[in-house]
Length: 483
Image 1 (tube, rainbow, N blue to C red):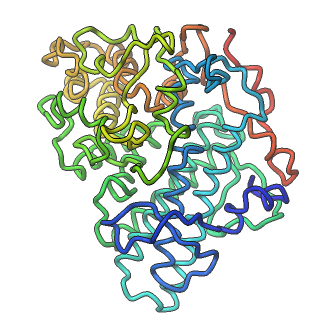
Image 2 (image 1 turned 135 degrees about the vertical axis):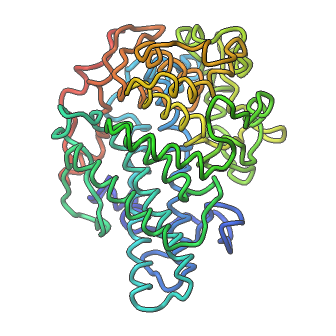
Image 3 (image 1 turned 180 degrees about the horizontal axis):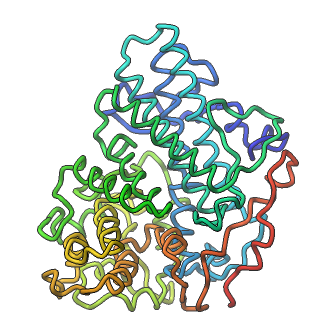
């Protein structure tokens, strides 16, 4: 919740910025990511700024947000994955029987705004210290500020796509998010939802601020952090959602360049087929990672891990999605038949050799950037260039060897790219967000012709009942698929 006594009692983190203590604070970006020390609202040193930033990373990667729910629902609610009636996990989302009181919706809302609150307070604290001349290492301070702006934009992007209609001319004036700009929202403060257009304007503003901070910052190159590489990937995704394809393509190309592991075209071989399969069983940075949420044995994820959803909780991949994979596609080896689950389960998140509950959560990969460029080129009719970037992922089907094996018209390429995104990102939660952007009608195992562009999740009931100004997505239940 954004404000109110319920928030004050149950979710004090967003209002008071009380960071969870998850270990000793790290001394630099080269050490253990995301640990944090409680700083409250007191920013006295650069260490306090770093701790505030790490607290935002910690909230971002929790299972309540991008560590599980916001990723898992991306497939469960878009005809790629199916929840389990046996375990009871996620079945309400693949069957669209959830209510406004669903705990997952409330958790995503609250943890998304935890990220936004923590980054806003940290940016403000850092700027005050800089203005007072209390920080000597301005390079490092700007690196922290840049990451906080990027994380804030990322959280807003996921939240607006979950709890508002997709960006379009028709939807610009529909309800978006309550905006947190330069000042955090204090307890008991009345708030109101902005429009979708205003929310995206805020996201773009934060992206611009992040870029300016990084221009004056120490280098942030690790894919464990939302540095310049992750920022450009987010820009590409945001501009795709806004239909600004020239800007999306430019940002995607820059993200690939910053990654520095091949150019994402037909001749790129990083990673190899063997490397691609093995990267899912390692927490090391892969040739694909642009920004990934790192996990470790110390996180003690257990039943809250994305891994458990697709293993012990018996959630499966839908037959309609599996039909998109040729027998010659190496990605088909990332599925396993399960008699316990009564279907086919994805194994992208089956853990490392030492811990079945530990996997990184990839948020941006080079493959996404190549597919963004391919789609942009297909939309302007540059077929050969679209094929050139599309082949980077399409050749994971070993029957596709050259651009000549790909569709040869813009319309056919766009259809292929939409399906290729399912093949490439199953389990990673892209489909809900992709289909709403593209306008695909969803055909699932248990429903058909679902117009997902009209659908929006309800604002959590607890937020509405707090009575501090947040209004519901009226009529959201009128646009459910027919099951």
